[in-house]
Image (cartoon, one colour):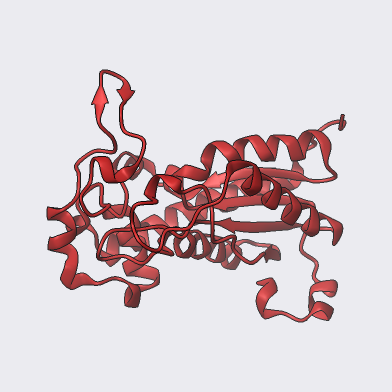
Length: 243
């Protein structure tokens, strides 16, 4: 059940015990992929898991702006501070919990959100009347996780499978030629770069020419299956006493 598409009366009658909250970003993804890539991918994984899960699941509207200042030099990128982002996520989870959907998986599509989501979900578990955990889809695709870049083969493949109209396939060569093979400028294990424009001319990391709709279908299946397995555990989890 996607809340944006339902009436409040149908929501009230829902038998769902768990909720999914997609979280993404509005940021550059090279010349070939949309600014909303992270949000679109997170929504696709959340909806696929909800469809295949054995019991009803609430899917909340996506949070489309995250922690993305590292892409600020590229037009269209939007960002918020970590404190604002954490507070917003916490408020939305609290809203879901107030209606009885107090077991929430935050389905994340943006690497820049990971640390803040880990922190805020821990605070929710410790102090609020809800249980929440973060789930980043590209960490749950088996051996493909090591191929994750930025606007590279993984993100582009998932888009080509779920939202093919958003990908400019005629720009894949341009995207690859102006991109970087690796995230950052490294000395040993230290990344000297702060923002992405320091090491990639057009915002791309990885080669999106290696993407395909077929790979996207596999990524969606793997991540949705992993999310369903997580939902099973979240439903049964006893978070213990609050402080």
